[in-house]
Image (cartoon, rainbow, N blue to C red; front, side, top):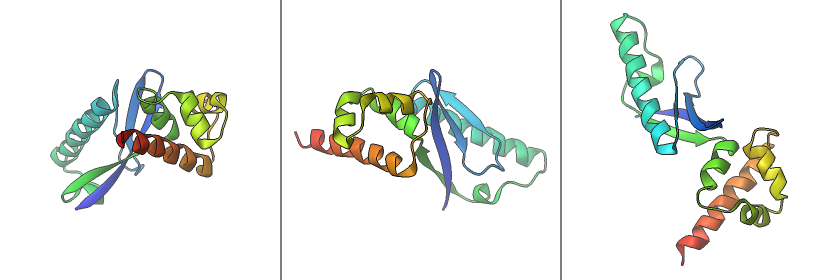
Length: 133
């Protein structure tokens, strides 16, 4: 089964999703993470069906059975985590200023890959500790 990477980001007031492969011009938005996942799947189905109806060539990753693999940007992770984790707690967990996390969440700054990993691991660490309660 082919794996198709779908990037989920946060744009003002919505999550957005697009296929990582730039050859597929298909995007979707949604107010919630669940909505954007559902919407991108519907948009991709519509897009692929349109290619087939027009007699076009379907991109290789969609030519057989495929499944989505979602990758969230740091901005999207922070916006999603805001529902469950106080940003101050996350800042303390990873050892950065809360204001720095706000800059990343609002798109004013972009974290380097090492910081992206620290943020992701910090969210996972807090969630794991909460799951043990």
